[in-house]
Amino acid sequence: MLAHRLEGIPPTIFSRMSALALSTGAVNLGQGFPDVDGPPEVVDRAVAALREGANQYAPGIGIPMLRQAIARHQQRHYGIELDPDTEVVVTTGCTEAVAAALLGLVDPGDEIVVLEPYYDSYVAMIQMAGGVRRPVTLRAPDFRLDLDELRAAVTPRTRFVLLNTPHNPTGTVLSRVELQAVADLAIEHDLVVITDEVYEHLVFDDHEHVPIATLPGMAERTLTLSSAGKSYSFTGWKVGWATGPAALVGAVLAAKQWLTFTSGSPLQPAVALALDELPDVPRDLAVDLQGRRDLLCAGLTEAGLDVRVPEGTYFATTDVGALGWPDGLSFCLALPERAGVVAIPAQVFYDDQEEGRHRVRWAFCKEPSVIAEGTRRLSAADLRP
Ligand code: GLN
Image (cartoon, rainbow, N blue to C red; front, side, top):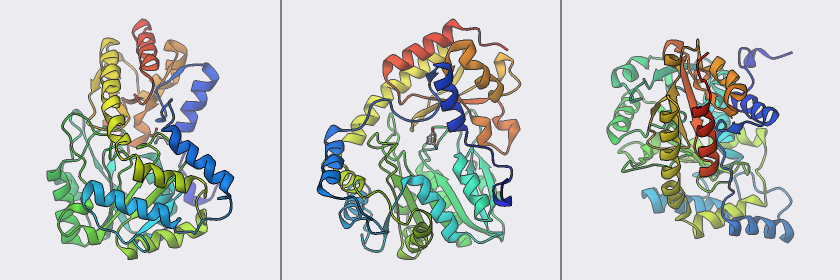
């Protein structure tokens, strides 16, 4: 049994592939979670909070200490000024922020321009909210935003743009020029931009993450979403947030109160400590991750896969078409047995199957020894169908 609002939406690929990794004992280069936890002092703070009695409901909007720390974070990194009492709301991971933003803002029939390939929860939540997605494809081999396609996606029914930068799964970091084009369009058509920036600190080489909220005229029409999961290697804590104008943040809170009501009390002071007292951890992580990115990309190339070197995030993508597979899903389902490795078929993130059919995503947020073992297995295996 399933309500219409969930019709056609399969179980999330991440659960499916991680279950496959567990049942086959394969090296999991699929779901994006680090195999080393974040800083021990942050864990200690959460333990202390549990012991101190932070065990009953937190305020729905989030504890003041964390909201203030989030506001300081936006100030410190981007010069964004926020009122922590009205312009910041704490959520249960960025996934809840996405859900609450869409449920709180989208009316049935509203169109939402969304970058394709898209993170799977966007599609599910747009559909649950009764919205209509208008994908704009980041096309191989460069995965840049095509400004003509972007403009063509906007209709009189468009009310939102749902951005994701740095972008999962392509690893594209949208440039200032691309973001300015989105901003121009948003201002011209009076659109609200909802932007998922959970990989904000995980950018490589000389790439720079630019929050679209910092572009002229955008602060008042942008809802920015992020979390502690990726920046501090606590993906299982599910502490996220939404920031922006009070009217947009208020809509998130209006929906969030009926979803989770409030988010986990003992984790909030710990994340506040991380943001305030360990501001360099995410940058150090990015430097370290860049080395692991290079290790993975070299290993994939050696295994005969055509890899796109990502500018940010946890992920690199390859095209497995040349190997002779009908699609990436059949490749990924065969891979644990063939090679003892799990990857994610990125085709599930596309409406445009011509574009996405053969794309496979690999995670490098893993220990170097795990990446090396995974790619060694790929090199040793016969990867043809
Ligand atoms: N964001 C993670 C990824 O892209 C997975 C999170 C999830 O499993 N929902 O791999």
